[in-house]
Length: 409
Image 1 (cartoon, helix red, strand yellow):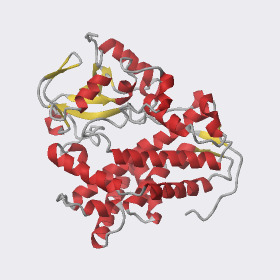
Image 2: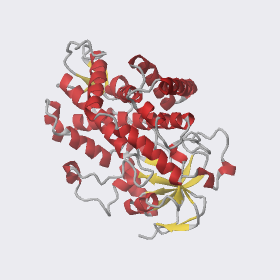
Image 3: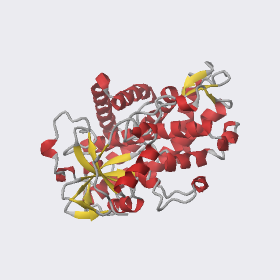
Image 4: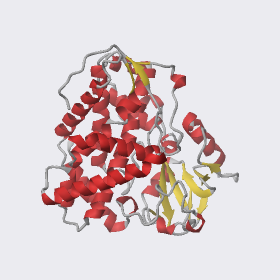
């Protein structure tokens, strides 16, 4: 398909949280596999919607670099640009390192996460899930998003990183304040940074069997500050998408008759629902960014040196050139791009941690609240107004009140 010349698409607005599937279909129809878009403040970029084109971008980290210094728009970016936290300059974390240094950093993270015992991880996830359900099970109703999904991933991640359990609730508040923005965002960021600094200082003095200690004990010569930055990135990247994965999967299971058996106590369809969500309703919709290190062509488009290229993961997953019958998605087809691709993808051990937390969270909830049901019509559910992360603002449910288990904290 030859791209047509038409106005760039604003990467904002209600279309991204009402019907993004139809929106991406229209963008692909009007612009092809690579579309011109504008970010907040009319900042230009390219959105890659094609599966093959996205695969091409993520497979060539030299041509499509993570080095944000290459951006040809820096002179036009104001100091208060709202997307600076996502597309920052000279950020010290693994997100913006390139080349051999990035591979070494990714190796340190992967090795630390691989060392987490999967049975211990699940045990901790079950413990925190039971604790959260104990707080709501007697009420007969709750909001799964605010009272469960947005609380569970941080508690589990903080535990395996090495934080004491009593620090978990404050870290949850800090992380969610950062995500929600507003007056609490700065205080949340400061609390997370100070807590991470204190954790690493303690683990330097007395290492333990935890992710932070293993990263500090690496032999690649990374500083404590670099480890702190990477741990904070890992916590942020592991929390919100995993919370949305839980929420989006439960929404599917509560509204689609194919998954009714799981709601009656069976677990066989939980994994199928989670996999279908990664294809059809992935938490991470679009990712920034890559920057072209020289003039090139992509999907029939001329990409200039320094242009910003955005990865349209949700659109690529729905690319009709690679999609088969949607019914096959629950059969274990994992060729989606929801975790990215290439050397900057989400590390495989991190994917396994996220999947364990999400699946355990769903299974424990269904075990404890077997008659859980949606409290409002499906049409009343609303999404977060963001083109980047896709998740519900609330998932109100009802169920038969049950006694708390107790002793799970």
